[in-house]
Amino acid sequence: MKKLLLILLCSPIIVLGQLGDYYKPIEHPKAKGLNFQIKIPLGFEQMEADRPNVVQKWIKNPTDNSTMVLFMVIVKDLPVEIQNVSIKEWRQYLKYESGVDDMIAGLGDAAISPKYYVLDNYSGLYYEGLIEQERLDYTFKMYHKTVQVFLDKHLFQIQILSLSKELLEENTKLFLSLGNSVLFTDQYGN
Image 1 (spheres, helix red, strand yellow):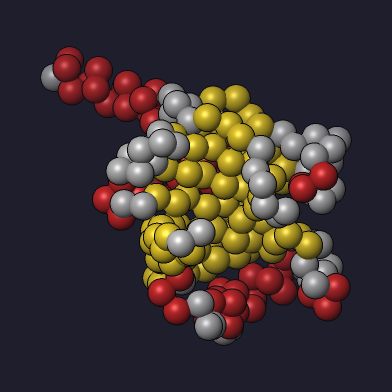
Image 2 (cartoon, rainbow, N blue to C red):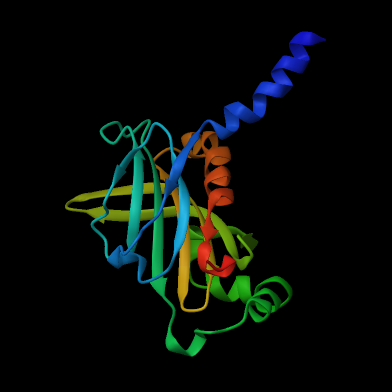
């Protein structure tokens, strides 16, 4: 009984131990003025990203395709027509109307298993899938899980990617922990 109690008491520590301190993109130009923070996944190398909307990325085993895992944080400006839509309106559209289906329309295999999702009080969607990309003369497939939420003026996205579906699944709990660590600090005042 003591062993079982010890295991149960240590389990939360093990799960929480996969995340480090908060990353805060203070005055980072790719954050586009969005104030947020997200915990850093331990055991991953933190890197500035080359792409224009990728604020930060963390990668594990970047030189080994069979064990490489990548986390990315992406911020995009929303089109002016859908800026300043209220939290309540986003929830209504995405949870009770056709919003999730509308958002993934045309993505094919890149967006399967879509569902309504909430990240730190903001409504959005979750989906997973397969992205096929070409670089130089190579074509490769990456499996991913993606969360997107809609704020006043921004689309905020976190994503996990891997060349192996099994490895992606092994890191799902870490991805969920990362998502749970996201804070959009402006909603809490000073």
